[in-house]
Amino acid sequence: MSMVLRQDVRLTVAGRTDAGVHATGQVAHCDLPGDLPGPGSFRDRLTRALPADVRVTAVTPAHPAFDARFSALCRHYVYRICDRPWAANPLRRTDTVTWPRALDLDALNEAAARLVGEHDFVAFCKRREGATTIRELQRLTWTRDADGVLSAAVSADAFCHSMVRSLVGALTAVGEGRRGVDWPASLLTAAERASTVTVAPAHGLTLVAVDYPPDHELAARAERTRNVRVAQRP
Image 1: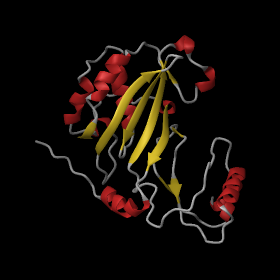
Image 2: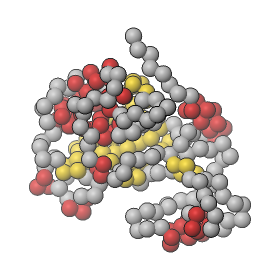
Image 3: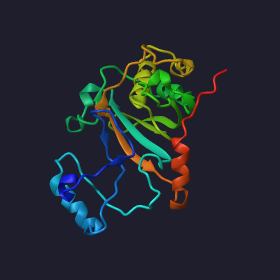
Image 4: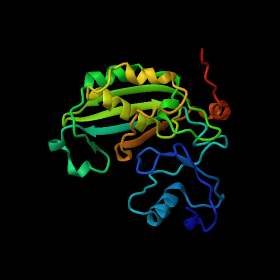
């Protein structure tokens, strides 16, 4: 963007994904000069400057209070696994993990349901200085499509570093039968990252959507998000 405008531009994104993670629903905002061409023309100029694996699908003027990161209500991810190596589609190899062992869908969902809610997910996160690990996990469900591919739909108000991949790593241990369905939830009482949790590969994860409130609620939402949550431990 700086190359197109020939000036420095500070971009704020909704989700800072790990290296190797995809995004089809990323949202970003920046302050731009007022003499730009129309949104469609600006989008086309960006497209010509971007590499083939990056696309800006829409450019829209935003409310002054909009903040792509702090105004977000919910972020939605999908993690894709094919646990039937012979059925793995080579054309989806960049966004689907091929798993060498069969996974039990019912066990995955039973264990996942026990993680939903507001918890301290420190056992599943890499700590960042000054950041909280308390998150409200709003959805974590698994489905299997007609091709046999398992998809985990994961939604939360926010995620900490490596949280989704760690949750998937813990749940696959349950799906394989190596851990009981209550094991991932038992880690929610931990005071530090659990060394027993494996982080799933990055390329299976995609940020698919970000939700925002109406314009008149943007400022209040951003202020609330900036307030660091503190765990209420017994």
